[in-house]
Image (cartoon, rainbow, N blue to C red; front, side):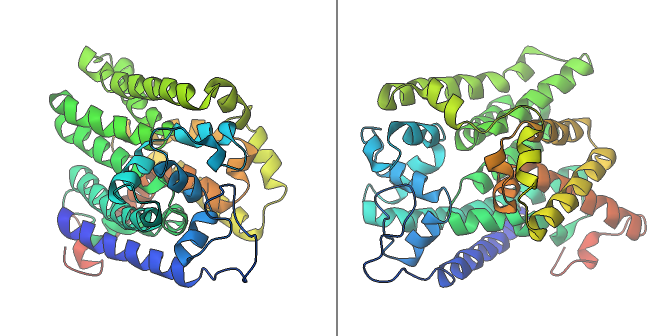
Length: 358
């Protein structure tokens, strides 16, 4: 079921990318339209238009500069280059997938976007089979149609990939505990190198162990590799692009608690307001209904982190839905499982209630 879920999810991802490409018209001839990187000003293909709609343009540019030697490729220079370079996983995967050919980078990112959606479907199915065996069926891949996945698949952001790694790590931890520490720590480390806020997941696991007074050195080891890898890469980026610490302070995603949300909400449109309200209800319900203390702590940790996100993150649903995608993914799984368990008779499988085989 995990493999089939991944294949179906990848097909959904391919459809999202295709729709995004069809809905990405090229600018008029002679236009200087573009984003904040020089390579795609103006864009020359539908995929490049998709890159310019979000931060995919930054990761595509970094994929063409694996040695971190050309910050001038960014219109804003070293500060902007350094900000995005501290998330190295997607750029280096795109570099490898394109075989170092700049013209192939957008295609590599498109393929990676499809694979990320497939991995997310597999990860959610594995977690569902761990916590609610035989209950969710095809409903386990519901998170692959969340707004954050739509945003990632049409702008080539690393959020879906990071979320898939986080969910796989959680499933592995809940299945094997400290016995599978190496594999679990590796998953969390790669998740942090895709999007740094993923560090809250192993931290939440450690805090649960401390709360239950069962904390062991092997559990602390979940955090250490991710932290060391991120700090080490931070040093590499600093060597390549300059004062990264000052850059992060200037362009970082955090602000005083609540200030970013309050400032951004004043300019929200109806879609932003509705999605924020629905998402908030989903998160609160999942914290109440979560069947595992680790899962409840993880969702709560993301909720706490969301309070200190800055105005830029909260300015649109396209932004906050993708940055907080792990929280919304876990929340949707919990709420879906709870509603199905209330609806189905004891011992029944949700596969009968969902499309496709269970």
